[in-house]
Image (cartoon, helix red, strand yellow):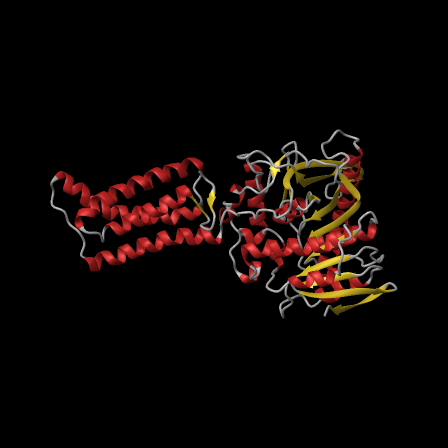
Length: 491
């Protein structure tokens, strides 16, 4: 009943409310014989659909529709009631009724426009040969004190969401809740994300209603194939689910993706016992101080990534009975991240040679650029404009050049910073916010470019990765020369 109709960004009851409201407005302009049945029918549909929405929850986008319908009803119903009681009826002259009808129609039209701008996200169907399963894990590192609290006995806890290749579930199986294990957790996360960028939470009230394409605890894909691993760190204030479309596409292609919540840094983290940890990290406004802070947060995230890789190795060895035991190829592991998470991925790879590849999704490299990277890296960036931080490209180039392996920088035309996450699926399609690739193209380009690189590095796919990446934008190949290299456009 609440499932969004593809292409409309509205559910069936919402569409019926819209049609009922428009019919009430139009009834004034119909021939006399049609006005009464149309008004009564439209009112019945409107009341019934609004009642359903009252039970399942009314999105704010429907409020102007209901306001327009209420205003239209105030003019449409009294003449019918007076006719029924035999009293004389009065109808406004057309030149008086027209402005009122236009005002009602304008209010009603605001509903679908708002639903289009802030929709319930519709996740793309993964294109790989596997169905996708998902589950949430929580691990505590007994050897690492929690640096964000003063309690000497507090130990660092990390929450990770796993997406993995799965068997196809029976028809009608409910898909996974987006943003959290429950709708309540999803609402908590959505409100925190909105608050983190200064927006009221109601603007994104459709996001917690979304379902992704994965199935919770789905049966692991059959056979003996072992799945390469991709660890993911979100952006500053981001959460483990922020790249769900990307993770599900990778999982459908035979990878296990583990995305992390970083407590006290992610906007909000809901632990297994119900405790809620909100972000305490914040910039100071001083450029040098902020760089120092970001370097520290990056180091904590890098340690989280290495810790989770260790937990996945233990899981694969069967230290605890698990359906994924013996199915993880921990000898082929990549580390990835968006924004600050991209910086953390670079740091994690420098510190931990178990990682075989790095993917930086538009992340400024905070912290030291030494020791040199031993692994190939792919850095995806938005279009570089006059508004881009002038330090960004030189710093990124330095990080990639200080490497013992060939790396690649891919500039994606039409991309914005939020193109590299799920944002285009549910934020207004404003170029300065999400770029110009659109809701369908954005997740496709980012996932396919990532897969082209990972397949080449982790699976040994034939061909030059730079040549494959050219389909998605302008590629710069960074070839090492000793400990340094040179970035050059790929012809």
